[in-house]
Image (cartoon, rainbow, N blue to C red; front, side, top):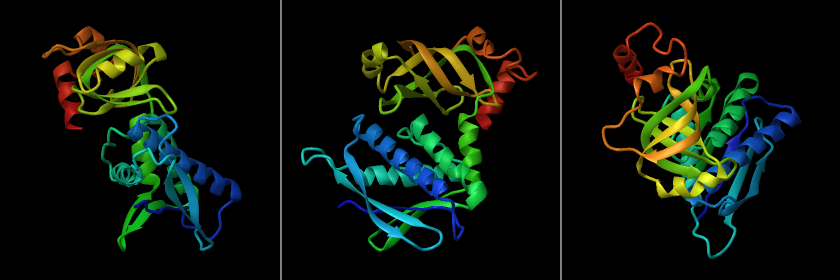
Length: 263
């Protein structure tokens, strides 16, 4: 049975109306994005209806999912669980699951940004009398930005498993980079969609413009070429060193790869 999922906005007695509306927009965007990613339907599988609006301080809004059609499987419990899990992971320094797209990260970043002014927010459910709650704090913001902020860019390749495809707000898929063990969000063009789908759950080599964070780990990639990778295939030294002029920050390539793997 669908559960109500709540958003508590900040910790202050009063917040500006604009911040309240922006927070609701971010919350709805995150719910819709997870729904579209999990259901593999750009329109999503449910409609989120307001069922609770508490006039306490801070304000709390509760929404409940209603399936768009009786013919559609109700995955709302999975959507809510993924929202709670990924929020918790990104507040505690973990890696998001394959269901969290870059646009969902953007929505969470926007919610977390408000914590600097209005205090921590939270998402929670009260299923079976047990409260499951995940907080959205300045630490969430720091961790999300660590995943998304780009410091370097250059042409190169990433090798790893293609684990998920999202076509809700952006056309993108995720590859778990074998060098860093972390997910890289890859943007692709509409004409590449059939090939991307054919290689789902396969080990692939993706080439294009890579955007990396301050540690040199790839964060995003504009996919120009996508191929099935043979076992034992890794990017060449030329491909990896082309990202920035001093990619290894003075270390040997072996030392650098060991350093980012330990991180």
